[in-house]
Image 1 (cartoon, rainbow, N blue to C red):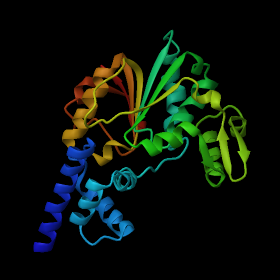
Image 2: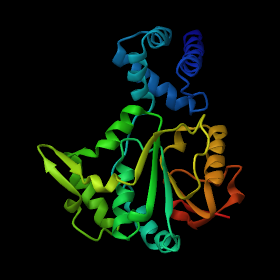
Image 3: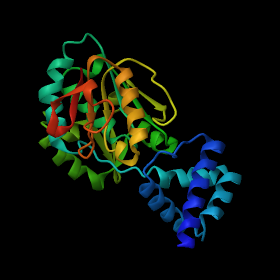
Image 4: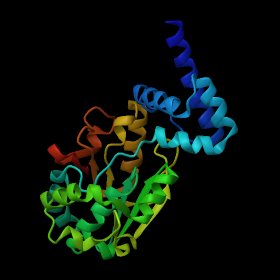
Length: 273
C-alpha cells in the first residue's frame, strides 16, 4: 500500500513539474491512462522510480521530448471507422456545400491520417479548394510527420479498404506515390492545411469554423477537461456548425449536451443548436 501511495504522489509531482517547466498540461488527463503510459516510459528509460524520471526530464529537455512521445501515443489510421466518413459524405457534405468558404478544425490530428482522409473526401466532393483546414496537436514530432505526409506501405492496404468502405470515388493509389516502403501523399492535399501546436487543456479558440473533428482524443481526458474542450468547440463553431467525435466519445454526460443536437447519433456527428 505504501509503495502504491508513493507512486501516486510521484506521478502527481511529475505531471505538475511538466506543467511548470514545459507548459504541457496533463493534470486533467485520465489518471489510469497517464499511469499506464508513465509505467511504459519507465521501462523504456530503464528507470526504477517516477522521481528519477522527473529528475531526468526537468534537467534534460530532450528527455522530456522523448517522454512526450509516450504521453501522447499516436494511434490512428486513414478513414478510421469508414462508416463515420461515409456519414460525413452523405449527411454533412451536402450542408457544407451551402457555405461559400469553409474552415475545418481537426483537433488532436496526431501524425496526420485524419487530415489526409478529410482532405481526400473534400477533394472528391469539390470542397477542398475553398476550405482551410487547421490541424492541431500538442506533439511537435507528430505534427512534423503529419506535414510530411509519408506513411508506411504496410498500412496502405488497410487504408485502401477503409477508403472504399467510406465511399471513395477513385483509386486510392491516385493520391500517393509509392517509394521504397513508403507512400508519399500528394502535396496538393495539404496546400490549404495549417499545422499548428495547440492544447485543448490550456489554449483558446483561434478561428470560427464550420466543422470540428476531434476523434479518439477526449477518451484520455477526465470530465473537467472534456467539458473545457466542448466549450472551446462550441465557441469556435459557427451557428449550426458540425462537431464529430470518436466512436467511444459522447456529449451525453457533458455540460454542453443541450448546446448540440445529434445529426447522425450512431456515428457521433452533432450539430450546434
